[in-house]
Image 1 (cartoon, rainbow, N blue to C red):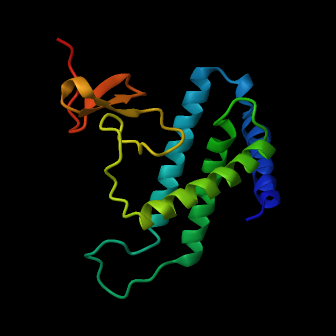
Image 2 (image 1 turned 90 degrees about the vertical axis):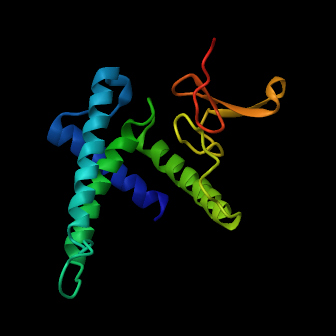
Length: 177
């Protein structure tokens, strides 16, 4: 997908929100409460649409008969999901225009795609995560960090950014005495 097509879709989505629903996705004009509520609503709507997409594929192992995927309905549900994902992208950063969102998405997707490929080539096993929030420590946006504590026989300790808590490598929370 080119940046022009993505930009066209994001611009059309912002216009749809403004004209049909009276919602300006310009984050600068939203209170933190309305932004959080909007994000929650869009995540729930996208999740619901994903479930609808799943219903178009005979995923249940006990389904009897020849499995048939209703490809058109499945694709249509994914388009619905994309509407809600675009809404989330448009409110992710204060002051970002659809153009900036399109550029950042293209750059960050490419970067993450390369990282995911390298993880697989390196034998990724999912263990390089913060024991507190379970985020991957090698993701650029993750602020959690691993520290080795020399005073405690080299035991690894993590500082989990979202919770501001400390955890040991085995996931047990550090308690202060």
